[in-house]
Image (tube, rainbow, N blue to C red; front, side):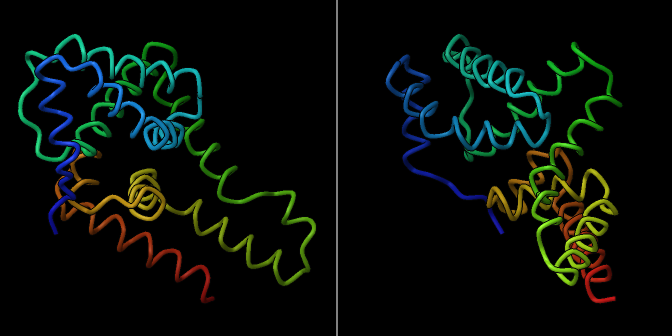
Length: 186
C-alpha cells in the first residue's frame, strides 16, 4: 500500500521552494495540530513539541531553496518533527526519562483513571485488562498503533516516520493486536 499523495501538498511544497510565504503558512496551518498531537505522543512536553514544530517550519523556510522534491509531504513532516523532537529532548534529558514520560502520557490519555473508579465492577475489570494489555506492548508497538489508529497513517508512512521497513510496521501492529486480543479474551 502506497502512502497518500496530496496534489495540494505537492503544489504548496513547490511554491515553498520558490519562496512563497503563503505556501509555508498554508502547510503550517494544515499540519500544526496533527504534528502537535503526534509530537505530544512522542514527548509529553507541550512547550518542547511546540518549539520543535516552530523549528521545523523555520528550517523549511530557511532551507527552501535547497529542499528536494518530496513525494509524501505529510510523512516528510512527521519524520522531520520526530527527529527534531528527539534531538531537542536529548538536549534536555536522558533517553530513559524521555521514554518513561512518553509512556506515562500515552496511558494517561488512553485510560482515564477517574472514570475507572466510577464504573461498575465489570467495567472496571475490562478497563484494567485493557490497561494491562496496553502496558504489555513495547514502545515501538505503542507508537505504531498510535500512528495507525489515532493518526490514520498508512503502513508505508509509518515505516518512514519510525525509520523502519514496512514489514517491521506490519509486525509491530500484528503483534500489538495479538497481545491486546489475548488480554481481552481471557
